[in-house]
Length: 251
Image (cartoon, rainbow, N blue to C red; front, top):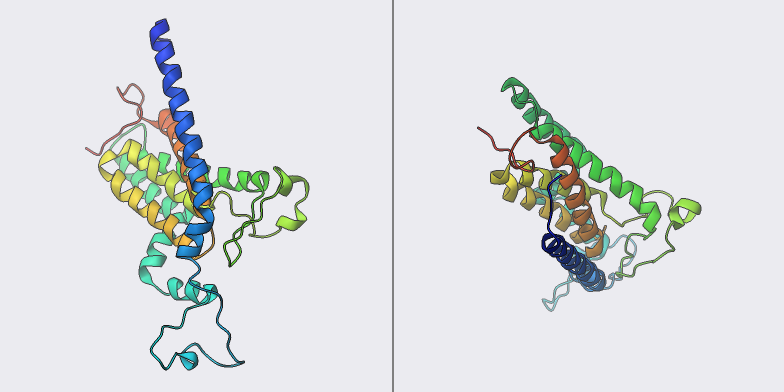
């Protein structure tokens, strides 16, 4: 254990306080933006009124005004886009298990004792599991079509699970947690690829917002959770004896 002078300890304490204040401010801002951003990205207007069997094409305004899509129609249109499916797959755990497994095989063949691929798989899996554990503890439902959020007591989903059955819980987003969990591990262990990995994770978070499945706070909490878990994973799984245990690079 390295000796730290009183000044260094005070400096470290001040850094921790500043980081805590920044984290609290970020969470407050994210929660404040939940409703406005949801209505901007996922809800374009009130659902249109249609006769039975009438399609949106049948209701096109003859004056040339645009007919707005309902949230369900908007989500269906998004899901038909290739870019949407590409970014959403970044939140699918088997995606990172395949990528991490391939990197693991390369590292083993190269004789490396530590593997970024293994860390990638552990980071994505650990962050995804942590998100699933937090959901019933925080107990916040997914947003309604109008952007309203149902806040519930802490541990509500643990002690009274019936109202929270199925996939109704949204805080934090599991897809965003998996994507950011892998991306932050990559950014720490393979800095050259970090920007691409974080772009993929951010794109995944955007798909969850655009589809109306989550609000901004859900993906922010998922990203912060990923920062914590990726830090632990990389410290434990980086190459022993390296000067910076957070970083590994391809040869």
